Image (tube, rainbow over all chains, first blue to last red; front, side, top):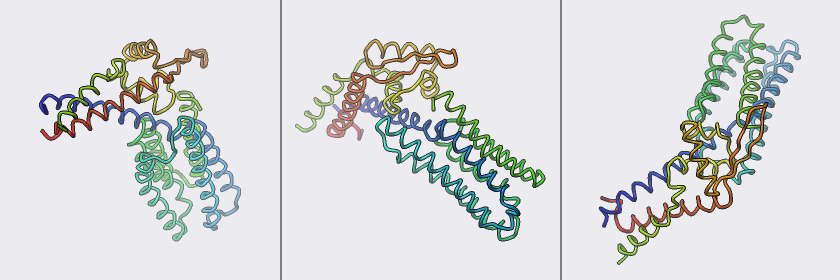
Length: 199
Length: 115
């Protein structure tokens, strides 16, 4: 009897695997919605404007940290709220095992960014921090891209490349690159996602 | 006795498998729609890695069976079709999933998985 049932079992297991795989792949698309991308981009541009507004910002690392921690907190809040709403619409929870994997994958790059920022602040080199943020954020996005659709990896690669370029530009251009990447790249990605999957 | 009961349960579960959903692409379509609530043609094509023609054929079969409903609209003057699972489709998917799980459980009872 086991000889007869083994192919059935294999087929059933294979079908369960297909279901799990497709369902996981389908939810990957919702990690950054179109609206989240645009709002996060606008928040980053506001961060750049606030940074430019503070005179001699590099002499006040705490002010710089405060501005960008607020930007980070707003970005996380926007994405979380939007994902929660989207998940609720299809009767799902926003916190999932996949979400936990994504967070764990992104954490090392964020940690490296935080350590390098502290190091640069300590050695009065904060004017070089923007390119490093782009590199670290790009690496975090590349890690997230491993669990996600290919355009997320492209976004990560774009940040890494922009970070590498920025570090070799003269310092006055670095903040413009911040607006272009954290602002422009997110907005572009958000618009592309909205056009493809809706807001 | 337990082995016999498990074997019979497995056969019953196999017989109850939905003939529409059992096809791999259609199973993929239903899984994606159940996960997202709705999806457009392009999303399904990219997620499942199938051709336009292949996807169209299987979506038509699911629509004919009453498992999927489509909504056509124009976005920037281009046709855009969104698919959603119907109540019948949701019920069929859950029944199919339950049958698969029963097969795996029954096989554990018969010892088929340890060969």
